[in-house]
Image (tube, rainbow, N blue to C red; front, top):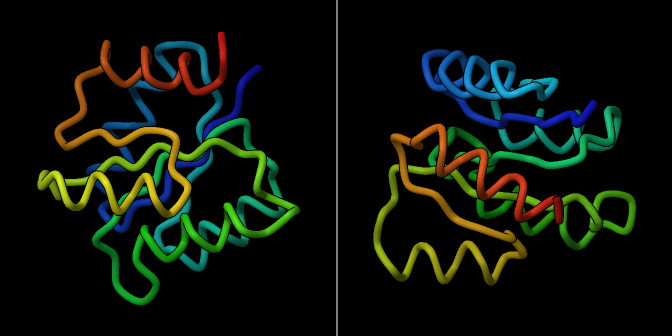
Length: 121
């Protein structure tokens, strides 16, 4: 089964995303900070990562950049899922190495479609 790492500091958002993913047959792993997300990505080797941007400490842009530049995690596609809806944020997120960018609240159909696109299925 496909495992997806959710990196978000909001317990509510983690619950919403995890419920959507599990309903669609994915295994959800969670981390509540950028630093935790990087550690979990290295330990768990998920098939894909959903990354929030606004988090205390290391933000999602920094964590995405760190993951995509590390040979150990560079192959894992990252989709940024954030409240930041400016075009400049989207462009910046993609420049950090993200494969896609979704603004919250993420619709289930849209999210699953983008996950499948990013996984190439």
